[in-house]
Image 1 (cartoon, helix red, strand yellow):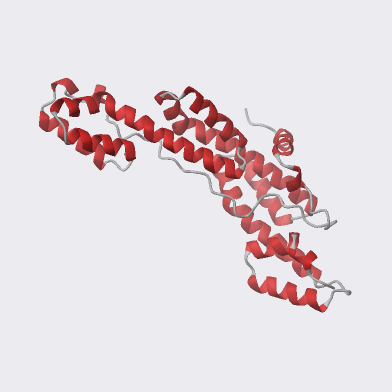
Image 2 (image 1 turned 90 degrees about the vertical axis):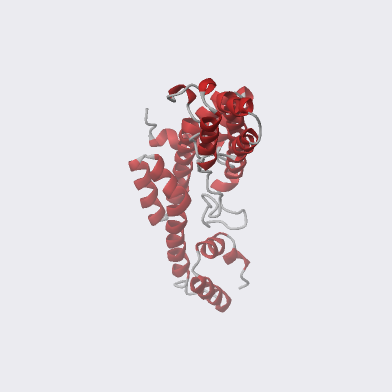
Length: 265
């Protein structure tokens, strides 16, 4: 069921640290920072497995010749989806006996795949922790608690994408709420477009690319308007001109939320 915007906003408020929803204490009326512009982009895992489906092959593994076994393992090594653990075990099997090659194809590859999947899940956990993606973190811990090859594979193939979609949706709703407080028209428009589309791609694209650009546009408008203040100091004018000349999203964001309050006069 598709959640309502109100539900997303409630989740966003519940999951967002208070610091991110309010302006700095010394800067009354300043823009709240909805999200860092330099967050770590989520992991894009390779959910496919390099291990062959031995049940669908024309010849059962226990009836394969040495050449057939060797060819099957070389196919695993040639697969771009093969991870470090799978490649290690495949090479060891090729350097061993016929029984070693047979054991790799029947069970060893799957065990090694679980090892690679576990590494991938930990990598996802690391990035999700940096980004505060609570649904992803919660689901990762469940998978690691069960620690079965099936659970690891299911998370990489379907569970991670679903959890990341939920976290992206909450983040976009939070960004929209703060942008509405600040009157950031471009961010509001782009966030609403993402929420209207309500697809994993739309949410991810806005959170990790579109938001940064839209916020930069709104920040530039805000900073340029500061020049219309008749009481503006020369130091502030110089600082504004410098940051507008720089023009980077990070410089504009920092000046709007922090830098302008550090200018004397």
